[in-house]
Amino acid sequence: MKKTVLIIIPTYNEKDNINEILSKVFAEQNNLDEHLLHVLIVDDNSPDGTAAVVNSLMKVTYRDKLFILNRPGKLGLGTAYITGFKWALKANYDLIFEMDADLSHDPKYLPEFLKKSEKADLVLGTRYMPGGGVVNWGKHRILISKGGNIYSKLILGLPYRDLTGGYKCFSNKVLRTLDLDNIMSNGYAFQIELTYRTHLLGYSIKETPIVFHDRIAGKSKLSNTVFSEAVKNIILLRLQKKRLPKKKKVNTKFVTVS
Image (cartoon, rainbow, N blue to C red; front, side, top):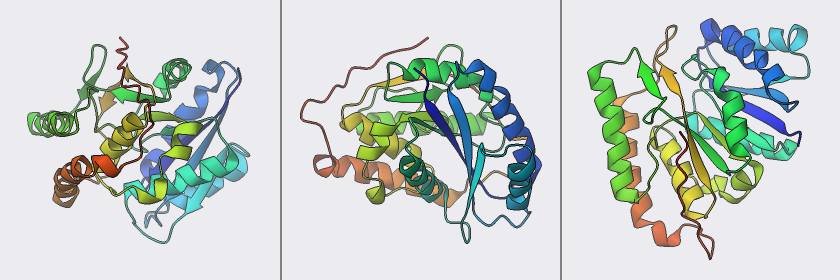
């Protein structure tokens, strides 16, 4: 069945990447079984003029396919996605993606995400499974990422292999029941919290392999503050488990997708 698909891409100083990522995303339209593909940019008042580039592309190249929300400043990744989610729900898109602007998330995986979404409420792009991986990361970065996943899995009791990744596909019904106004995390832990809440609500979650490419242009947005928030918020989420929304019959079945 034909579905409406929205890809949300938060931006802050992504002028060097935005044209290429949009070109690659819309190039996949012909591979999506007639699903209608749109993109929403959530820009945090990028000083480099990212929004101006997007506005130009909206008028000429991607008319009626590309949209932008302009925010007053750098307010964080989590709030950018929450803003985008609410916009998507108001427009009633069937499937809503998270995707980075820096080309680390390859749009070539979109058809496989959509295939998996036919039998899942949330599809996670996973680096740490057969067929997945990372490119251009040093040993220290890999250690931090894998350590963060192990830490989160142990504390929250989750079976998924990549909790910190930001390439995801949500069904409309998941986002409508996630209580978006009460998401506590804004940085590194944001992705973990969304998956945890979705899991507690009993929705089906599948993983699909992706190869993550470290950014070539621009600067990473990661910082020590972001990691500190993650360590603290994972513990808080576990302590608040009894108060977080759940379904009466929680389906915790984990489906491995190779």
